[in-house]
Image 1 (cartoon, rainbow, N blue to C red):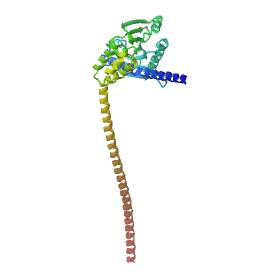
Image 2 (spheres, helix red, strand yellow):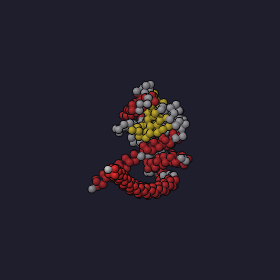
Image 3 (cartoon, rainbow, N blue to C red):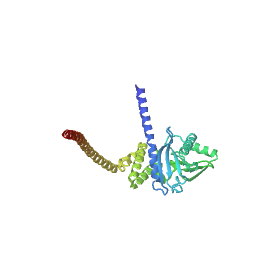
Image 4 (tube, rainbow, N blue to C red):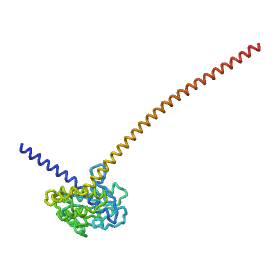
Amino acid sequence: MENHKQNKGKNEQNDKKEELYKQFHPAFCDAMTQIFEHDTCKYEYEREYNLNSMPNRIDFLVIKKRKNAVSEKGIGKIFRKYNIFEYKSPGQSLGVREYHTAMAYANLYAGYMKKVQFEELTVSFVREGKPGKLLAYFREHDFTITMPENGIYYVKRHGHIDMQVIVTRELGDEYIWLKALSNRLKKEDAIKLTAEAEKEQEPLGKMRIKTILDLVSELNQHKTWMKEMNTMGIRDLFKEEFEEKDQQIAEQDQQIAEQKEQIQNLNRQLRNKDEQLQSQNEQLQSQNEQLQSEKEEVNRLRKEIEELKKQIGKIAVI
């Protein structure tokens, strides 16, 4: 009985942990979008881009709207037209196997999308901790590694797709949204995160930030200062606005429901009218058929009268 309870407790913990990891990818996509939202270089974004009917999916795809535009962000300066992101949440490995998988995805993407040229691709690996073994592998295979900014490692070799490894723990405050996706968040970074969140005015931006803040609060809920900040409302940032928006949506849904009911009533009235018209048409059709029949009968009688007149005329001559 005791073992059963322990196993049940472990299973519940594992389920909770797995559910938490599922939240990383949406938050990562929101963080990337938030970072590049006001970049001088404009982009289109694809989340979990399906390569084919099989379960091969790119975590995040960033497509330049203007091929020759240059980003002002260190992460974006390496970008070409099509930019593939491989994201690993805390606890997930990023090694040689994951590198080869990402290269396979890049080749599949270029293969399926015929308009995509291989030299128009870049691949970015994103992880909280520094993948030392992977960087060592790159050096052993004659890749050149440079670090234009803290936490950003450009990886290049002639004839190979340009790559970068992004270590979110090492990034500067310019990338606060990526840095925040961690269970090791520091209080000062959380305060900066809240300050940045309060600057956001766009509804879509607020929705992205709420996704990130919910995950950050969940990841760091065990920390005393996070409990204090949650009490102060970090998790409820924009709560009133979203509740107001929910109220507006509820009112709109009610209006839509009423309008649908009105439309249904009008449709019922139209159907009744159609049925009446159909019935009248059938009556008119029946009357027309009757008139046609009577007309034919009149014509027949006229012909008989004419025939009788002719016979009478013949008899009178005799």
